[in-house]
Image (cartoon, rainbow, N blue to C red; front, side, top):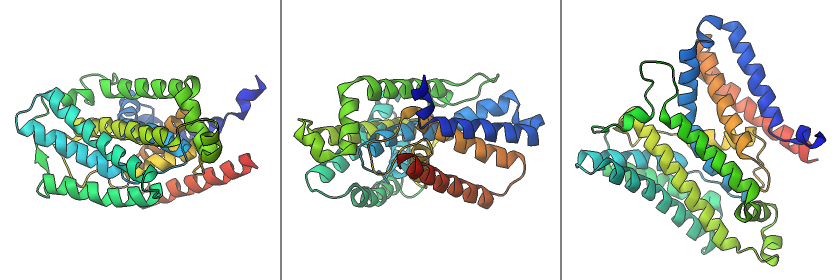
Length: 310
């Protein structure tokens, strides 16, 4: 029982509860409404799924700065295919595979070319954004979503759309993989010490490549849901999403040095940022103040992580 109090996600959970109560007191008429709660859940979906993939990468000791560009590219690919008359399943599959392929390339250059993930993904961030703009002829692609919009639509009531439940299911699956599978233990082992993991028989290169492919596929799913929200393929969409995903993992107790982090913590971090943004909007706080608050939270989370490891 005493071990549960050492869980790194307890801090983000306490912060989430405190922030929620604060905004509930400041704007009870609007913030506590069921419509607002459903809206916050929908707004968290894309960041949450992207953060799930980022959790695996950061646990591995890596980083991915290209997820925002990958989400935009996925949306463009899906919209382009739907406009060309492709079936919905084919368009979605191609979009997810595109993002997964980007992850494969990142994993290849990280393991085979021995380049740092920061440099590789910094380059791919620009490459994928350029591909998205090129495929879209530097403009938005309007296409009939053919029902994909129902994945994220609010509907007539305040019930949660399928996209929210999909994000929850993926998070549960990711948590189970990290906690109860050999693959999850290998990911943590590599993040703690790649050299030691290799000496223990872990195939470091293979696991690393698979993690980036998995994260790419999750980013592709997030891109599909982003298209379902916008119903348009926008090559300039999701700029800065990579920072939100990294922040969610860090706020949730993840360490950028690798080996530490959890899916639960990342999901709480994503929820916390959504609650802060929504609450600030409800009480009339300017966007620039929201960005400052988010940055302060990230720095505080890093300080807490350093103190906890000491």
